[in-house]
Image (tube, rainbow, N blue to C red; front, side, top):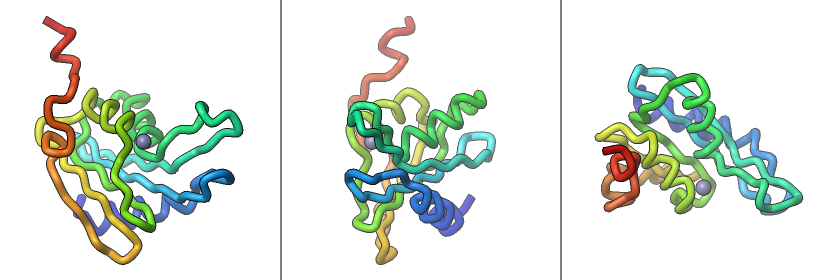
Length: 130
Ligand code: ZN
């Protein structure tokens, strides 16, 4: 899927954010290696530890349907925030070798990079499986 469509889906997903505490609206749209598309938004909780980021919502939706390899992931916020460390770790578990991460903001600026460059030396399943 081209980046323009992925951006539109991420932006749309951000409108579903449940964020009464931070007021942040984060949207994510991802494509898995078989071409399936999943979206997610941030969902906060009064017990802050129960909060989950948009990226992990989208990734867990994909994995829950046995879509295990992420091909590209678009993260949209008004400001263009990068993914947090916990989301990067979850991405590393399911990243295809060439996973591309795109970070977009309201003004239309986009930063594109390979996941390997976003999180070099990441801890992956390869470290645990002989
Ligand atoms: Zn996160």
